[in-house]
Image (cartoon, rainbow, N blue to C red):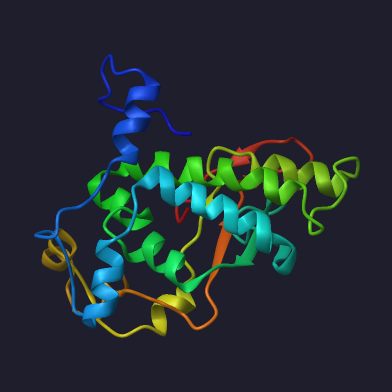
Length: 218
């Protein structure tokens, strides 16, 4: 996890509890959506409960997912592991579009978003490592993937296609709406794909030197 700036003397456990209570007020986090979906999003539980629900979904669905390596175009020799597994549409909606979810934490602050996504990876990682998808940790492949998954820049990924396929300007997050040049901006969309998945991307690593790299594009 990245060092936290401006946290002063606040202990990590207290800071974590504060982050998990993030909920963007309705005056800042609004929707252009049907009433039933707005009601669902407004009913999203707090951050810690959302993380628990993701861990439950990973435990029951991870073996129906996919795992693959990805090579870094900008950094020859570096790779990372990627894992995608199916999830319920209701939980996907809460995580990506709700006022207490993944994007809402980044809206509150970059630090809150980093804590949320790092904790999410830590909750899901044990399910991934025990799944049928994961190669034996005794193999070089399993060791490299493990190094990537445990890296400090591993995260929940935003799937571009989900956002590209969703209608424009369904999420009216006040500050984002003010800063976006067009109403077609991806950040103002509220995707809910037909077959939703959570995708985890590991940290870029060099399998030989075990070095880690943070891409400018994350």
